[in-house]
Length: 62
Image (cartoon, rainbow, N blue to C red; front, side):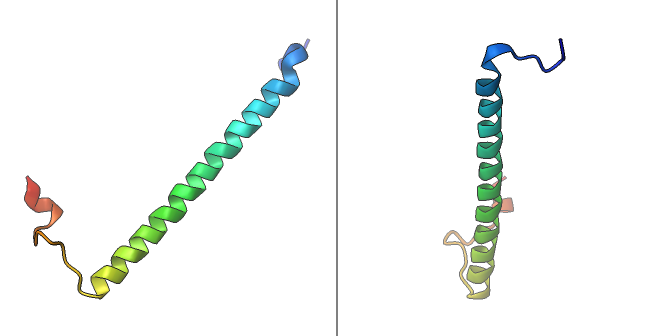
């Protein structure tokens, strides 16, 4: 008996773990790409001179 003896359900267990790993990897990639897009958009808005409507920065809300 080996440490990887999963019994008759081994294909289901292994495929489930692979699917979950793929979904988590896709979510991490999606979040990373979206973060970079949002940062780029903020840089573009800042370069265009767009300011917050309130005229306050995030540090002013203490």
